[in-house]
Amino acid sequence: MTEEELTVEFGENGWKQLPDAITRRYRFIPAKVEVDEHHVGVYASKTDGHMIKAKHPKSLLHGSPVSASIAAAVMNGKYVNAVPLYRLEQEFLRYGLAITRQNMANWMIRLGEEYLAVLYDHLHSLLYRYHVIQADETPVLVKRDGRSAGSKSYMWVYRSGHMYPEKQIILYEYQRTRNASHPREFLKNYSGICVTDGYQVYHTLEKEREDLTIAGCWVHARRRFDEALAVVPKERQKESASYLILKQIQTIYRKEGKLKDLSSEERLSQRQVAIKPPVDALFAYLKQHESEVGTEKLKDAFSYALNQEKYLRIFLTDGDVPMDNNASERAIRGFCVGKKNWQMIDTINGAKASAIIYSIAETAKANNLKPYEYFEHLLTEIPKRMDDSDRSFLDDLLPWSKKLPDVVRKPKKQ
Image (cartoon, rainbow, N blue to C red; front, top):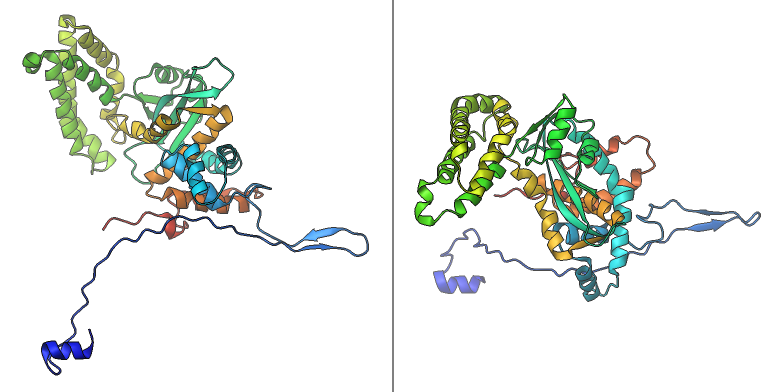
């Protein structure tokens, strides 16, 4: 306010300045595309005609107009926000940029294979250092994989154990089948505990090796009793065995929830005191009443829980083992959401590249990084070092590296 206005309001020298009242409003700045033009000096000898170019940064893909920022935009659009490439093509056209979905697909394959695969392999080797990991898989259709139309392929996911909140790793792997050879190869150098959903191939691996232990998933056991309860008439549900068992599992989960902030050693000790007795009681009940079960759904639930007892008890022996495999299911959810939008992958190379890019995206999210900024940083830095025989530079690019620029990190919630 002017001095004259203040004098009218308060009289001569009758006011004092207080702190400003501050309001904030969001302002949206629409995306735009710019063209960077690079000029490289070229020189030729006047005598023998030989030529030389000035030193210059390597392009991301030789002869391609793709930059780290535009590649990161495509990766963020498809692999983080589940936008199909045909819709990204339309979006770029609105910015005045004609990039076909075929070009984008080729970029993703080449960038995944040539650059991001280097970090993917490094993360794979680091995953072996975790005492507990988790695994899951989901079907996917690949249009041209050499088999008849509609043949199922699988995207497998392996991640560091849920009890390790720091330095999380999530890795996808594409395979044409669901047989034991794939986890056998992926986990060939791993020793420790792997939490799974009860799929038999993991139990096959455990029988083959002395250094691999498979832990079961209580959510999958509980789900079968939920299904059994659903076929019981509502007025009789609270009297049913399904209801009683579900309440017991709920009790176990409630007790486990109170231990989440403890150290591994303290959690193990408390599990022995507070959780082992209700687990023992549950399995004793199942064994005692198995022969009395009536419905097929309930028979299936009893049979599953009793067959999985060995694996469902593993969490009682190790404080780092979670009760269930929900973390793996969450890790693969981004892929499942995208799959609903684009329905199938065109080629095997596309599926393999997707596995690599999804791995980087999900690992970034799990470590509170901004995927677009992380992709752009990786695609800027990795090409500079591709000729290095020493791969130690990759440690500086890991999601938890203190050398990452601040712009890559999500701001902490106030």
